Amino acid sequence: MISIKSPREIDLIEKAGNIVYQTHEYLRPFIKEGITTKELDKLAHDFIISKGATPSELGYEGYPASICTSVNSEVVHGIPSNRKLKNGDIISIDMVACYKGYHGDSAWTYAVGEVDKDSKYLMEHTKKALYVGLDVIKPGARIGDIGAAIEEYATSHNLGVVKELVGHGIGTNMHEEPDVPNYGVKGTGPILKEGMVIAVEPMLTFESPEICLLDDDWTIETEDYSRAAHYEHTVVVTKEGYKILTGGKNGENR
Ligand code: MF3
Ligand code: CO
Image 1 (tube, protein in one colour):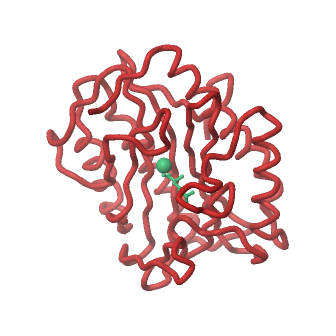
Image 2 (image 1 turned 30 degrees about the vertical axis):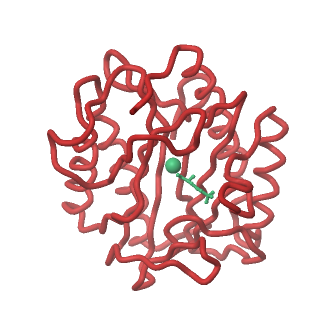
């Protein structure tokens, strides 16, 4: 069952989502050569708490940090560590905040200093793939329409689509029904209705989309060590289309 959220619930998810947006913006100037991913984690943790929310990822199924920091060929769930960021790295930061029982989830990939043109291409088109996927959302559209749009955009730009990991419904739980794959067939899958809240999150790779799980049991990396990017917003289906809930207070998003 895919739940329909009430206006009050949507408002709380948006408050959580806005804190996630502010945390991303707060971290941005710190994402520089020399900072460790653990330092970023501590900054994000303290910022989220200072806003009256809690970092949902901390302790989730035993996850040991408040954010996921996935560098270069790491796709998702990279655990913050003493690894220092280097000029030319890219880092995907994925975070979820919980406010009054409701979660907002958003990931973004950042360049550290000056990155090469392949990395710029990967980031630009993965971000675009997120918006291409979001733009099909409206009542009556289907989950498969989102995946088909993302997959079509990714493959036509020669990027790989990671298939083992998917977006999801979100609300009082970080992961709810339905799954939101980044591939699929138009006209298939659950029908979207006004008030459904989902997180759409394409994870695209520069070369092969095959992935493996590292020994820490969390970090997912590309098998061929090619770089990956990850962009995610939590959105609500509206009468007209959709609204981003992980943007700024005045409707800004990235
Ligand atoms: N934020 C991730 C998502 O987009 C989930 C991370 S789970 C964690 O669904 F345990 F690794 F934090
Ligand atoms: Co998510």
